[in-house]
Length: 349
Image 1 (tube, rainbow, N blue to C red):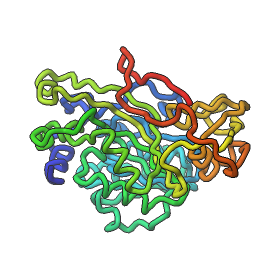
Image 2 (cartoon, rainbow, N blue to C red; image 1 turned 90 degrees about the vertical axis):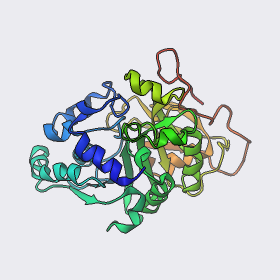
Image 3 (cartoon, rainbow, N blue to C red; image 1 turned 90 degrees about the horizontal axis):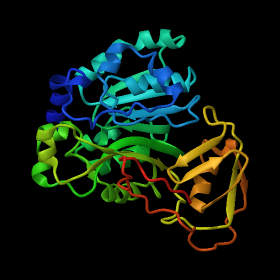
């Protein structure tokens, strides 16, 4: 699918989220109260032009430098700008001028709304597959986010490689996107409506894991997933028999991550000091770490906590001196392990 088709769909065909023909590019209503409060501060026009499918607000954002890939009209940029505070910075990249025009128009509004002396956001016109062509310093971002956009990219691997290049070591890519339970047939991938609706450009989830690892992100971690229903009988028939999920992953830029979860007899204790998480910290769908409790972890999880911005919030027990084999019950997540309600089945290691 050409960039021009996507630009036309999001710049001309869609004038607001009500124009979407499926529910793929829709964020669920169940979100934390603090996120709802932040979104309540955002200009109505920006909210109207939002087409995301998940929540891209990880914890520990104060003072962070964040890049949003496919920022559109800027909803997530402005939400994150309030969370990083005046000492942080949020940069948005998008290829659709009509969307960026909306985003640029409301800089002063949000700076005043959030009580900042000046705006802590900036926007760049460009393609997320060609991040090296933008004026962005390599290794300068703490976090890179994206919300239901990478499925629209013509070269997913280029997006992830570019993201890895721009992240600091110990930084992370935290993003939501649409995935398919099998590879999308060529004819479906060329359907402009299905592509614009974030369906036919979706990666087969296992291909995504391979591409992520090849791009420098060892051990991708699934945060949450939910089954997507098309809710449009005509389009449902055109995508059958494929099933789609909206899934959030976090990818850490940590070169020492191993290909499997290895056991070194390590453990962590969460101090309960992260804002909005006094009782437990959820690293991913398999790691809910309760405050004050000794929690055994594999070597990769240890590094995701000790060699990142989360380190100050944990106590660390052990080292890498002795190897005990594979960590029992870790890994192998699929974003299609749904229960009868269409939600992810719980699991923990």
